[in-house]
Picture 1: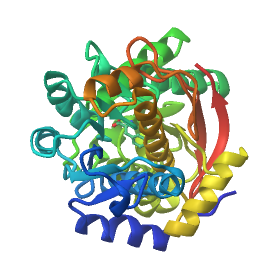
Picture 2: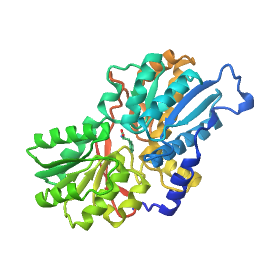
Picture 3: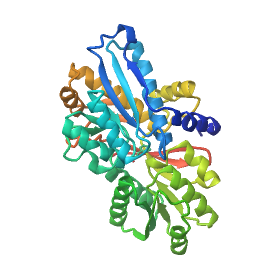
Length: 385
Ligand code: PHE
């Protein structure tokens, strides 16, 4: 079992996150060695503060690790310009506009939360600057937008993985769904889970929503308690899900909870406490995966940041190398050439799996199911598309 040093998590991920607004670093060579006119500017939009702050901080850590490693071997100057979206839709849109209009970046990496990435896609598309998201899984993000791509799987797959797991592995016949009505991510996952679970013959007995502003979930949970479903699917983000699990335990609800990648944060365990234990979530990466490349990354990341990396760190690390690979193949700093190189990526080997972009510029990859313990997530199984 992997043990997570939580007190360190909190300092690293939360305290420092709020201080970072923008940083610029060189990727691939020392500043002096770079011919400024040749320098490639990569914009990064991340939720470094606000409700998804642990996601933003972990992404930045992963990118910086890739950057540092790559600087040891690289020859071409890449400048990373990081903007904080404050976890909001409006700041995500203004951040990408600023990166494109004033910084004249050639490509943008980010955001994390699907609703925020959706808000950034029109700027990418209308200015013809590629936006590659490492983590946003909502199906609609890349649809019809040739400048928008991603290296993670999509939610119609993720929802199906958890619905099949519920029906086949846990033998669940009934499920409750609690959906975050403020999030495109959560609503999309609700739909895909419902569709797949019903296709197995399962029944959705409770289907209720909550808001990201809510802190008391007892009204929704009382409905769950009355129906006693076999499983409760909560495709939400760690802040609300942590509180939901805690309150569910207080109400003595016995059902197994099922979640998705938005649960994956050290803050989840802080908020849920002992109630975090014994549930399952789908994810992109397991830190206790025995693959030697994964283990090397986990070791290096722990050495640098004193904490075990989650999926977000691994996806961002992959994003760094993925963009570097595309730029090398593009042999140009032009957004158009880089877009074409990104979109034609086949068989890129990442920590989170082999990345091949399909015709909708989505990565077709396997998912892992993790089991939660009171202290951290452990690998349970891998599911192929
Ligand atoms: N998939 C989530 C979204 O689209 C973001 C996320 C990815 C969160 C990976 C945690 C880990 O909003």
